[in-house]
Amino acid sequence: MLNLKRSADIIVSSFFLLVLSPLLLITGVIIKVTMPGPLFFRQRRVGMHQKLFDILKFRSMKVDRSAEESFDFDKDEERITSFGRLIRRLKIDELPQLLNVLKGDMSLVGPRPTIEQQVEEYDAYQRRRLDVKPGMTGLAQVNGNTYLTWEERIEYDIEYVDTHSLKQDVGIILKTILIVLFGEGNFKKTERKISKG
Image (cartoon, rainbow, N blue to C red; front, side):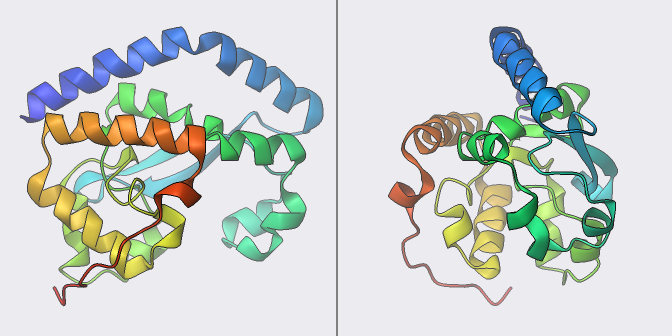
């Protein structure tokens, strides 16, 4: 299963990088013209078995090293640009993570990678989400995402760890495309029982 999933990651991420290269190029040019600073936002994240890697995103906000290093999200609204808001809505800012997938730090589907500070606070149950590679999208992202509580996201992540298959991955990718087209508000959560771990 793991070898098949990795092969699928390489083939699909390579395909999308090729097909989407004009969009990636245009996005990069607009960012450089409208927003001084680096093209990519890089941040250290925790992957499978606590392996550290730098996640890539197109920059959607003005540079503020202090806010980025201290994870000060209160400044996000004043830092985000109009174009940044657009590429976030369409998930275009996430597309550079196809390079993370190609490299092997991430998978197309899996729990979203998080920062070291959060992982340090995980209990044994929550740490199970690190048993698979983090993904560009995942079960939590297609079942409410920002409308979910942290506990509910963890539940979906652990469910994915226990049940993932290529068939499920295809379904998650297809649903992700629908969410990009129609918005997360049309795919809000349904009530679910929270496990105590």
